[in-house]
Length: 369
Ligand SMILES: NC(=O)C1=CN([C@@H]2O[C@H](COP(=O)(O)OP(=O)(O)OC[C@H]3O[C@@H](n4cnc5c(N)ncnc54)[C@H](OP(=O)(O)O)[C@@H]3O)[C@@H](O)[C@H]2O)[C@@H](O)CC1
Ligand SMILES: Nc1ncnc2c1ncn2[C@@H]1O[C@H](COP(=O)(O)OP(=O)(O)OP(=O)(O)O)[C@@H](O)[C@H]1O
Ligand SMILES: [Mg+2]
Image (cartoon, rainbow, N blue to C red; front, top):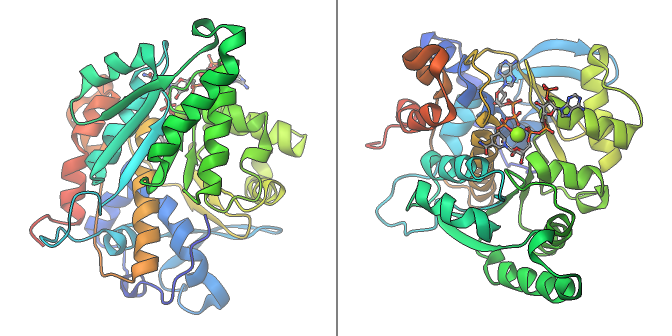
């Protein structure tokens, strides 16, 4: 997602790694927020005008240039909208998750509730009818639309009309969303994939930023045109999803020796998109530069943490976009997985991490400010 900015955040230039900063840098919430650097850092790094004191080179790669670690906390603090009495519901973000099927109800829930816990005002889920009641029962906070269908529930002669009515239903809502997340718990049913492909095409026409995760990545890997040249698309692949993307798009295997160059090449080949490659170190690129987060958060790798990330990325990207458009003076967020692990150790699960999102946010940007 290419966002440009008139001036670099002043706080970046003032940054020094003090104790609080080090604690924050060790958290996975920090990793999530590093995505923002992709949004804000390119302009800062432009011509090296203001980036030198805020971004420190971590690794050097010949073809792709330096990979930077940066002060995500300052960026997040800057873009966070104020808790201002003059603001009304919806102004801090309206997010939609397209996902949730018979097998997976946890993933869309994690993504949607994380968006709310990070600070969005409204969080919707568009899922299959089977998944809807289950997701609603997890939380009354979510707005759940039971509109998607899988092949088993649609007769062959109904497919076209069902597909059209699904799209029509989503279109009614689409323009209201600041960002959509396609894929958490979506499943891979062929009819469902076709319908979601149509939804993605519509989102693109409507200029709605789109985070693609989980089975959404399976969909686009087999239909790369869905995100090709879309600068409002953010892909968040895990190790397997990245492997499949590289194989399909670059026609080769993942090369850890040249990870930065390969990521850059992948972004360039797809065109315009931002990719956040999750892993031991997260690598984020827009095809021009690469940012890295190598600090360690929680050692637990329980399923669902990527869903927290995709929901959070949706909120931060909409805040970043709004900030850049309105040039407001915002603030913001912090660690959750590290806190959850501190408390729950090996029994830490995704719900424990979500529980700590609020405290993490309060640490970086107190509500009373
Ligand atoms: N609580 C919930 O509802 C949750 C639901 N979720 C949802 O599940 C859906 C699928 O997402 P996903 O991440 O599990 O799928 P995918 O990346 O395919 O890996 C699955 C496994 O397959 C294997 N494997 C796959 N590819 C491989 C390869 N190339 N080479 C080798 N192995 C490979 C590998 O298994 P292993 O080999 O480690 O045994 C890997 O662990 C998606 O919608 C997501 O959102 C999650 O968010 C979690 C919480
Ligand atoms: N080896 C690792 N060390 C530290 N953090 C990691 C590691 N691998 C992934 N992470 C972090 O954990 C979070 C989830 O990444 P992961 O690769 O588990 O996603 P995922 O497989 O899509 O998760 P999900 O189960 O939700 O689908 C990300 O914030 C990522 O930065
Ligand atoms: Mg995932």
